[in-house]
Image (cartoon, rainbow, N blue to C red; front, side, top):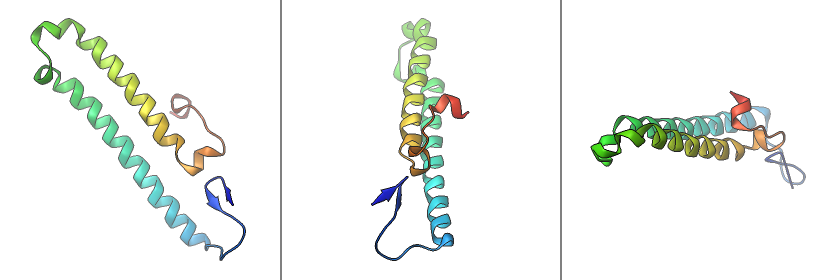
Length: 96
């Protein structure tokens, strides 16, 4: 059985240190994924004209805003997959 992402009932319980180490590792993975998403967004913005023509210049702000919204949604999904947030999920925008 699982409660908020932790195994409960039956078997051998993990020690507090093992659970903390697992949580730290999970947090590191989440932070790494969030950093990757932010880096991709900055790359989209900074390298916009490497993938778009100069004629698209007037659309750059709108395209970057759309990409930012997609990135925020992906970030919410990443944070939402964390067992720590499944017990009391908050929208990403409320967390920051």
